Length: 280
Image (cartoon, rainbow, N blue to C red; front, side, top):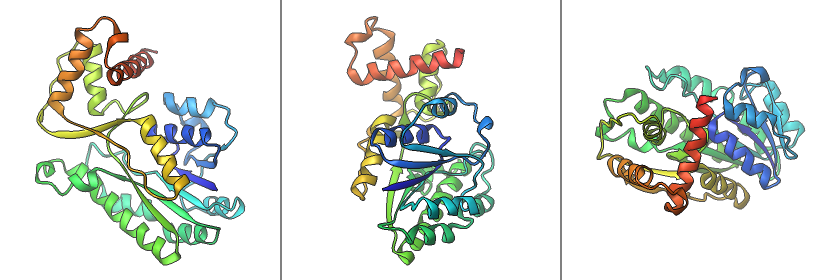
């Protein structure tokens, strides 16, 4: 079992790679830019750790000649397609340009993967693939287009995997929470408001969403690879409003954190660290 992993510089990529290391699986982690470009806290941490099974490769684009050579030379039989174009998600999402970037040389990549023993591709899909079709999100064009891009990419990859006899696993990612998560995420926003003692303003307090700790998701991700079938993470479902109320109830009134519900105590520890990292 040998893996090539794209999307190594992301918050989720950091946790997935750490879990793969624990499972003692040989993994070639791809970074598209030079090493000194990665300066976020989780990026610096992943690059400073001494791994036995994770091998970083820098300045390599997905589908490039160097990328293909790693698949050939290392006899890679598992591709973790975890990268995605999300840099302009909060502005006008360029659907066509981003699809061209994502799908460049994809046929060549999957073909070369198919030449090795028991080939497998695990694709990180998104909850936005479903909600982009709902009326309530029509005003959020950037995320709708992001969801469409994920869907189109998924369908093309699924087709090519069938064509070249590569096993395809769709691993849906929803709202991961934990250390180093994006500051723009809903849970992080609520936590930040608590620690800074600022008023928390929610535009859609009754909207339902699901979340789970990133370590649990990473563990299920690795199980999917090892078992060669999709392992669904169990997400906690709640409304934005009730999430806010539970969060504030647990941390605004309970002085002794040891007595807090284990879930929220763990959450508090994460966000206390997150807040300290922001200060540093």
